[in-house]
Length: 461
Ligand SMILES: *Cc1c(COP(=O)(O)O)cnc(C)c1O
Image (cartoon, rainbow, N blue to C red):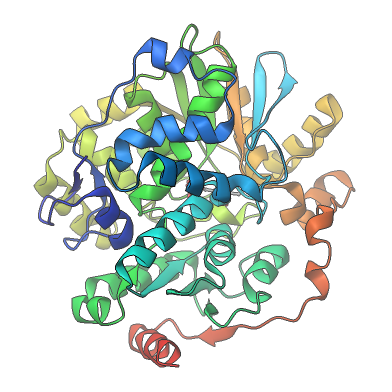
């Protein structure tokens, strides 16, 4: 399988190259040249299989010959062995025809572990083969960073730098990034928002001399391999609820559009997904864009679901690329307009997007009320991100079973959960000492030159 850029001007790459590259050199994102379509029999045969086996069958056509079958199965086994639940992504019913997909049983208690753990394994295997060293730099609203650090800590051929917005991540998120003791882990607190961190990250990737000098690799959700790994749990959930013989709907708490874009890919592969619902918090640019056609940034308002406090949803570019008939020039023009504040989605593209995605938003009060109401009606304690999803899902229930993605464990956001319910969720026993481990972090300005100097200095050790 070959990978092309959404802006049409970067080299066509293999899976391994696209995984190691992250952002394309024309500023675009890599997507498969063609998405394979599975037959109904192929999906039906997956019902009841172990998660790792479903992952193998779903991901195999996309990774091509990158690894032998035996090697790839070994990497998947290692990636998911550290999860705290045998089903990896269990479904739990919370109301008639409404299910939670619990994606928080990984080592850092958020869905990011699903992709990061297997990417860590795949990158390590590829680097061991080539003998090369890479520098991973990631920007995080909290969960990507902890998942990346957990996946790459202590690996021989990798340094991992994570930029997070100072003071805008939860204490558990911060501690998961600042307490690992390995020398190849570098937690950086930037004076700015997540969008600032992501913009500086993109600037580093666009400085080709620096990019080549430090062998920069990205693990943000711009990395295609992450999207791919997330397609798996849409398939596992759907086949366990009766697909391909009946359609299933999904509601996805959305920030950078990576997770829901994985659902879109699952649908393109032939998985019968009825509704695919975007759920946003008060940072509702995606909901507004789908309603009005105007994609306009107006600043980030910090919320109790901080992993969704995003204005520029990187992966939305991938959806736009398809909606604009895969016209790279048109996408490059839209993204230039975005730098100046926004753009209007063409009528044709808007209709295409609306045919695929529904959307809704939850205010802060609605999020808290949903945590409270769901506890009362089902006994389930939601994290604020999952609660945004449940609120929007309830507005989109239909004939098909609705699956809301529970993207983080409530103990990752204990303040909001306690505010809503009076209950303070406890961390799982395997990480109970997190609050007492010493922290290690470097405060950095929102300045490209200073960041590049810091990376150079640290990897020269
Ligand atoms: C990252 C994250 C999201 C948003 O996911 P995207 O792929 O960026 O849309 C939602 N909830 C939690 C808990 C997250 O960590």
